[in-house]
Image 1 (cartoon, each protein chain N blue to C red):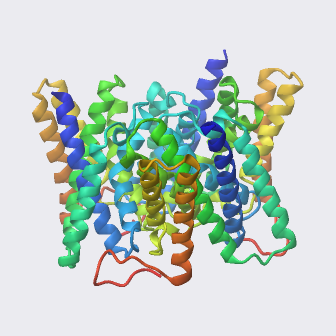
Image 2: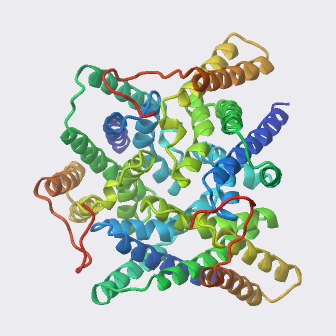
Image 3: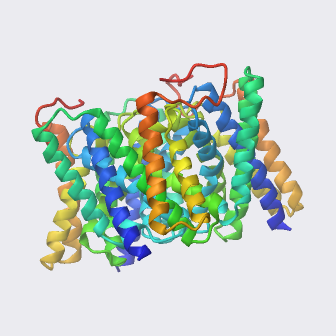
Length: 208
Length: 208
Length: 208
């Protein structure tokens, strides 16, 4: 059962990130097929890094379904943009937040199955959640979202802590997933909406 | 025999990319030894990523010949530039195209030997072909070639499709290689020469 | 014994790089939790790449001590900066140099234990030494130190050659380490202080 959950969550996460990569590529006016490269790297980057670090077979090399999901999501969103070229930036941010929340959970789970302990699992979840988007932003020469000061990596970490708490309390599996998902997406979107910005250092202004 | 082909193609591809990295480093006025770093990363980056994703030993760690080839190509091209400082950008683009075409083939082959199926093999070929140059461009703070809108990743994919077609038709091994090589280099250089630009989205101007 | 040396050197190197990443994140006004991401990537990036290339288990996934060391170093340096916000750039450069020198040695050793031969070992040492900082600079959109023309990668290589020479002469283990450490840090800091710049190409001005 766990395997099925994994598979479906991973497929959805990959598709969400693929769409977010396509939208950013469109926004940044990336030319031609470069959009497919940006979108694929966004969709597959975080999970590939996770699997390499955990010394597991890389998910999309082991199972071509993930490539089908990625390419299908890219082609559908390209078709969509051709007919509705004025996509609001809000959808990009929401897709990115949900994709990040899903990958966060998959990363934590896969790490726990590898018996790494909770500290490494939460680090791995955050790594999986943020790296696809980070590589996307670096390639597109954007200021990486993770550097911007709105909750991003911290939303992942908070989601991971919710997961760990529910898991330790013995909550059913589905509640651990839903709790972590909700916490991550709520914190991320709330931070964007109400402009929450954790101040780690005192006396300085932060990048907008 | 296949192993020999691999070895020779890989050695040549590595040398071509090492020269292209040296030229870009020179062009971007990278200081001192940084040129060697840029050139090595260009030469070894794509193939290292391929081997990691395929869960194979990384080629240049398993066999020092590739490092000799890389360093020799770098030192020769540095010596060359010292005496002929006005290298045309055309050579950089040609070297990059041939290196990409060679790595594309090596990536596809290595992937097929690992029994991944054709879809993953073509993705892996393109990954191998474009990633060395992509990392080079990111480090040098250039707009990545892959984002520019002239055929680049699409030339790789087209070369991969030619390979797959010839392979399926039962063409001799050497023709699969030559056909894919020719298709990739022709599309890439033709796109630069005649300014072919695939338009995926309609209503927007693309980055030049 | 070798294992203990490794462990301690690695823990110190990780902490030094974590502090250097925190300082750069502060300097570049990275917002909120992004500082922790930058610092962690700096601390763990070079060693992770080394372990992946050598096909070894990634050090911080195999042993949570490295994460404790990283996070402790980050929190201490954040606390320090809150009360002493005017940190001189000199400390950043020194920490970066010592971290690089330590990772250089660890990379060479781990590579030699994997029986790769000296050429690959020195390449691997330099890779380990410079990649954490390189990823940090790319994420923070800085000109990477390695591109700047002051000795950086070359200081690593020189440290590696000192290690190889002492090792070949049969010097005691501790002298190999101290010799390589001293050579790398001295060359790096000397280059910054006296503005040593190797000129590989003749007729051009370099990036400052």
